[in-house]
Image (cartoon, rainbow over all chains, first blue to last red; front, top):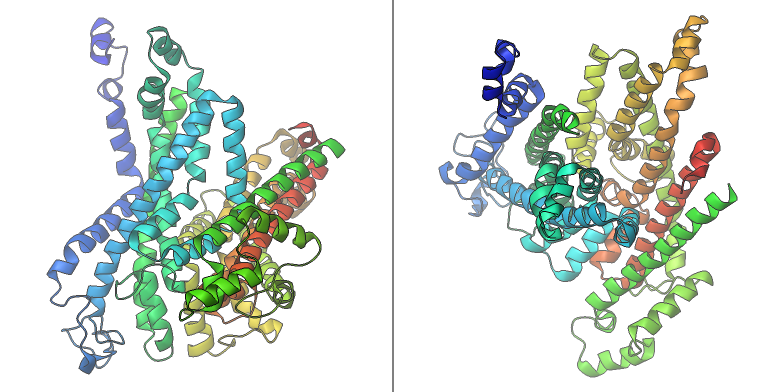
Length: 307
Length: 306
């Protein structure tokens, strides 16, 4: 019975504000009052616009070298020009263009690696949470092993051995970041398995695959979305670390971690080469984390009332 | 207690063996060790000779068993890159990384515990919001960048600390702060939620009604229970410090295990890398075991489980 039909039959059983509120309305209302979520959303939106359109708008490319214009300072430092707003790097490349282009790399790696991790973690979590038994034990053992592995060291080794490229970096970071997806999915799948509607689905003859994908998975999406958002941030930082150490994205591709590594030699006299990409990295990850925390707060009471 | 300990030990041992297999096979299948030793310009004959001399022509499973059983005899293999026994390299560098790891955990405790307590005692106050923003920021700041910022600010602009090196404990202050800062968010959040739960418990209300307030209440009654989960997370974080020292050690030019790992990876030095991966995993497992034991000692209820 829908809410409207119910309120027609029993007029006055809902307060005026309550009767018109669908779950979506409640979500929107909560989201619009959550400061952290709003701040994160606006900041992330701005950064994504910069990443997508920035490199097209800027008059320089991130790759063109001009050795007569090496290490120009940003416009607010004496000697800076409006032609190169954020100055140039050691090869005379426009720093603004490189930082804007670097945002693309970070976003691609973040989204890609979190997706790889999500696929692995959710698959294992659904299987172990729904079926239990020896599958659960096996997955649990895998989890214990993964947690004990020195992740960064292993990622460095594998990227170095296979040969660094964007795809390799995404896959390696993804393969090492699935544990949170697993834990969340497994717990939720265990809970859902015992609910009546799963028994109903079984009674009408749905296969295990149908139940897992059509009945269990959609009910996990809230929690998975929170983990996904936070893992995007983690993956972006992991990529920056790998590139900083020289075993991630390779030059001349402008990854933020790589820009900071290149700026390390100019630490004493051109500190902005380190400061600027670091600030970009910080803003991107902080906005993603604020969104993730926000989504958790917004969706959390909903999922607890449904339990 | 004995059954609890035995169960945990068996799982840890099984995981250790699994990880040694992962480390060994991953590295030995991905690279041809003979090619690495011979160098880029070597011809096929030279590579073949090296393969025979070092025994690389034997099946990989046989080589694994040899490597793994040698570990128990204290023989960690011979580095191709440093031309030294790996055990010697590890022993040389271990004190440096251990100092860094322990000092950075001290930094974490000194920042996270007071902030977490203050936040829990006055929820929604300015100190609560401050600690939350510290956590959110610390989670988003890349470790290596924080290190470089510290160098720019406190070693170059205001030359208070040395830029790099590991000659004295004074050299370790900045690196420990940087490495320790990354563990502040999880520890602080746990301290806050743990203490909030405890402060709402019935026994604290009883203690209050008996006339205990403030610091006395906190230290003598509330902290004991709130610290339980914090202790185990600190052990896990300490385990991460060993593997995570790679970045900090490379930023501050500290000659520890992390830098050894980075240099060995870049030199494709299989024996050193596989040993370090295994040792870091072992350290993590041992610290986790210690945390489990400590928790079981403090909370008898845990001993019955699993």
